[in-house]
Amino acid sequence: MRRLSQAISEGDGISLIAPASDAQAARDAESQGAEGVVVESDLAGIRDATGLPILWRAKSSPAEALNGGADALLVAAQALEDDAEWLERQCAEAEDLGLECVVEVRDADELELALQRLDPEIFLLAPQEARDADDPLENVLDLLPDIPAGKLAIADLEVTTPDEIAELERAGVDAVIVGSQSIASLVRAAPPEV
Image (cartoon, rainbow, N blue to C red; front, side):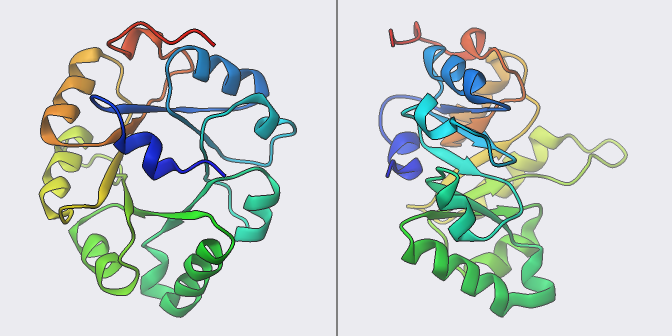
């Protein structure tokens, strides 16, 4: 198994995680310098297509995620409000299977609840839809100081420029899920040869 936490905490700078809609997209992400891929459904051949860690964002059980080739499972802190015990069992099952549990938080209340009930190693900062003049990038940056030292933070934003990536990196974000299938323009260094 590949460790998402290791991939995004090692090396210099911020890590980029790319969406993968199929095996070719995973191969492309790896060749362009991504350090992880995120999938939203069970994709045939995804595990064979890439050596990168796979973050499973599909609604399924930890066992289904593992069978699909996942290395990490995303769970939403929002579910703690409705059924905290179920979510705690999901995370425990994921960890028992060797999957890392990444907890998605959208605001300070969800972050506090996730720290109390789950205390995960990795947080996905995914601000709610921008309301009024709210800027999703600013919302992520506002949440970041409340992430305890030693925890990892992944931003889930529609970043499109190297300047936005640099701003997240300066703030201390460990990784960002980029919305683009072509990430080469967002990677500072030349992508590694694969």
